[in-house]
Length: 529
Image (tube, rainbow, N blue to C red; front, side, top):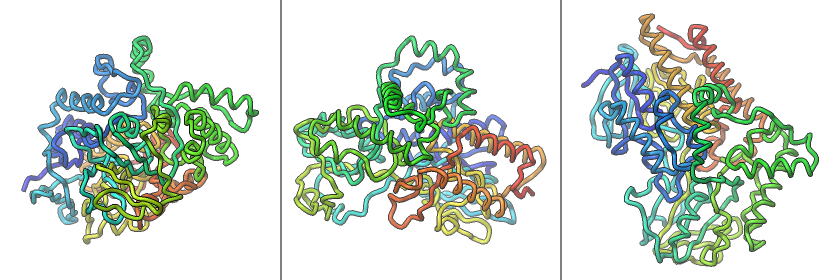
């Protein structure tokens, strides 16, 4: 059995950077990846229209300044093939693939307190031991198949947006159903509609959207950005969102209706998540939020010709941006096409899927293909999918049965030498993910270096520090409107999952300062031996 300094699980942005940092310091590292190559999220999610909702010029590694200058992104928000091409290029340039076993899923990990070692088991049956186990498995990695009776009976083609065939899918001339109108549904529906003979979009919950305003990369804007890349990167590291955002903040409730309309016209024209960055009270004041939500609904009403369809597409059951805010490209206009039909599952819920299609409470929809755009077991799913056991065989699944608990979103009491990259309790999904990943990876790397210098073999979060952190994260979340939505942020999309708001809401800059303060204080809140 091979013995290593560290095992890294996952070969996306997190796993590649973590492996690079540890190898650079001379540690022996073995990476494991279930896919056949690097990419993580961008390896699996190849559905039509898949793209990042952070701008391409900032959704990339900051530790490769030469690549910043050399790499050209073709669009403001580049699609999955371009992002995957970037990740593959980094893996090739830094020679990282040789440190990974691909097509190998980690299934178990158990900690031996006598030797301070993890034993990691894989699906092929191999085992290795390592001092440190680093879970770089991503926040949106475990696809959620809905519990609809009869899915297995369907005789047509079934797809999940998170497990899309690498060879692509041709829907030309077919009757297609898309179930789900979250981010993946909103991105894929316009593309599928271009091919399908008839498209039925099954919507349970209308989603707030903002226009992406995507376009080919402007050469002048690209040159200007690259001329100040280093400054932009450093600013992003200490910002709320992990990105460069407007510095002048606006209180919505200080504006009259005309001033607010003018302000929202400006940000909607800019597009993307700039529509939420400037506003100090958007996610704390119900009155301020409703004013923006109604503006958003009116924007939708102006894009969809059928007033009844437009009204069904307007989100009214949760505050604006409290579910993952979607950046759309012609999603709403798609419902103006005569071959596209919106099916409102609140009015006519799905009863079952059978051999020929989808049966709702009022009719049957004959289709030849079903696309499940039903999201993921977010933030915790990829961690609890592995049978992780600490000393005395304590299970992470059991520790998290009432919701995830940890310290700094990085370590879990009772599980020594285990680190999670962008886990629950950290900013992760509320920020530019690459910025959040880099902060976590660099903190873990510095922690392991500090342990090596001091001759320490074991580090574990203290229970009382973990309890204080969980309480702080919960209180911070409760001070916002986020918990008012039944979102995957609280696990509401997974039947039986504990309802806990999982992300840290106070911003990447504040979080970075808090993590750095812990390290500067000799890793306060940890037991180090």
